[in-house]
Image (cartoon, rainbow, N blue to C red; front, side, top):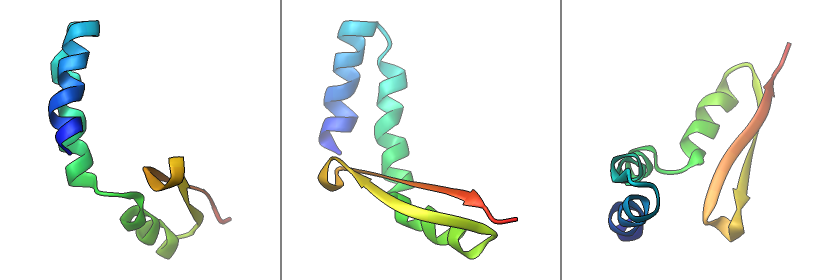
Length: 68
């Protein structure tokens, strides 16, 4: 979280001139957590969902489709 909240905004300001966009990345990440919660929500509905980890667990996501 330190990296997302402090280092990324500085790099965003240095290279792109807009630190605010990157400052929000830490806020969103902290609030959202990981994809396991979203996976549980969609798995209960009419969806076929798969939880996927990327970069040896550093990032996660879900993929799926709606069941007809």
